[in-house]
Amino acid sequence: AHALPIEQQIIRRAGPALLPTTALRLAGGLLYAAGLHAVFKATGWLARPVAPTWQPMAESTGWAGFFMALGETLAMMFLILTALVWLLEALKAWGLMAWLQRGLAPVLRLAGIRGEALQLTAIGMLLGISYGGGLLIREARAGHIGRRQVLLSCIFMGFAHSLIEDTLIMVSLGADAVAILAGRLLFAIAATAVVAAVLARVPERQVAPSQG
Image 1 (cartoon, one colour):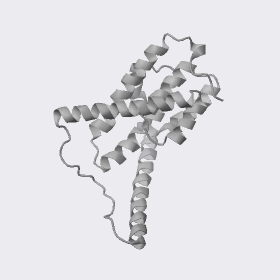
Image 2 (cartoon, helix red, strand yellow; image 1 turned 90 degrees about the vertical axis):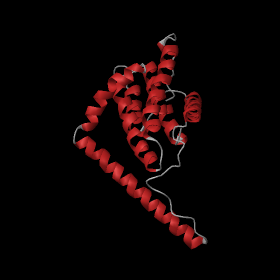
Image 3 (tube, rainbow, N blue to C red; image 1 turned 135 degrees about the horizontal axis):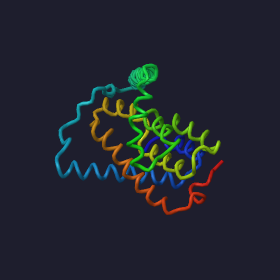
Image 4 (cartoon, helix red, strand yellow; image 1 turned 120 degrees about the horizontal axis):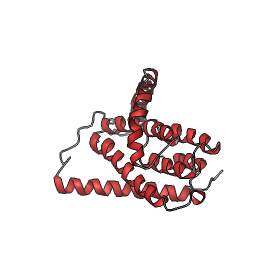
C-alpha cells in the first residue's frame, strides 16, 4: 500500500467509494506482510543479510554533506526511473505489452474480472493505477463496464499494480523477487476472488455506486 492519497482519488473517480477501498488496501497490505513474516520465521527463508544492488550514500555531517548526498540520491533515482520509462516504452513499441496483457487475461479471470475490464486491469497491473485507473474512469463513465467489474478491477489494482516498475525498484533495494512479484500477484488474485464471491450475492445496482 503506497501513494494512497493520489491513487485512491483515481479509484474514487472510477466509482468505488474512497474509505472502503482504502481500508481494504491497508488491511490487505498488513495481512500479506504478516503472512510473509510468518513464512520467513517458520522456514528461515531470506534470513541472510540483504545485499542491495543500489545503496544510498553514507551519512555525512553538516548541511553541505547532507544536500550533496541528497542530490546524489535524487539523481540516482531519476536515472533509475528514466531507464524504467524507456524500458516500458520499448516494450510497447515491440508489442510485448500487448502480448503480456493477453497472457494475463486467464490470470485475471481467476480473480473474477471479465469482459472489458480485463484489458484495463492488465494495463493497471503492469503500468500502474494512473494508467489503468484513468482508462477505467473513462470506460465506467461511458457505461461500457458494469459496477461490479469496476469495483473488482479497482480492488485488484489496489493490491497489484505497476508490477514492472515496483518490482525492479524493490529488487534493486534488496527485496526478494518471489515475494515482491509472485507472492503479491497470488495474494491479489486470492483476495479479489474472495470479494468477487461475496459480490456475486449482491445485485448489480447495489454495487459501488458512482462517486462522480
